[in-house]
Length: 200
Image (cartoon, rainbow, N blue to C red; front, side, top):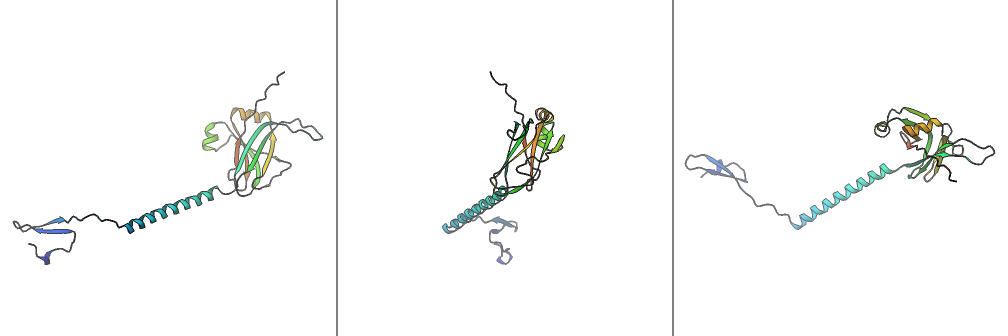
């Protein structure tokens, strides 16, 4: 038997002396698995539930923060005519209509355009357009800079020239509305509406 004074102070280890060679062997003492009490299980469950709820609340707050601010919806129409007035206007226009459907106002600072000659540059990289331009005074009634309130609608016009029509058909032409909080701007692709011949 191993002298108690020589026995190392480990509670989960059994030390056995071999009577034949005097060597000391070590064996692990198997212990029964720990069983949680009902109060401990309730505590763990409540803590897990609180962690899930706090994570959800944090995610919802982050989503609201990202979704807040002015949100601009755009549409573009081709082949627009101006009727009425003292002097007839023979020009054809492109029209862009914007709605602020967000929860904060913003200011429209400019209306421009970009032309891309490939789908990749138009929708993937969205950089290095083949041509860019700025529309001078797109609206006489709602002059830029224009305070764009929540729920407001803004309409701008630009000449529908033969060059514009060709670019819209051959490549990817966008009108871009710039606002104080819009970064690169809000864009909408221009598609030329084909005129249908009148039926007799």
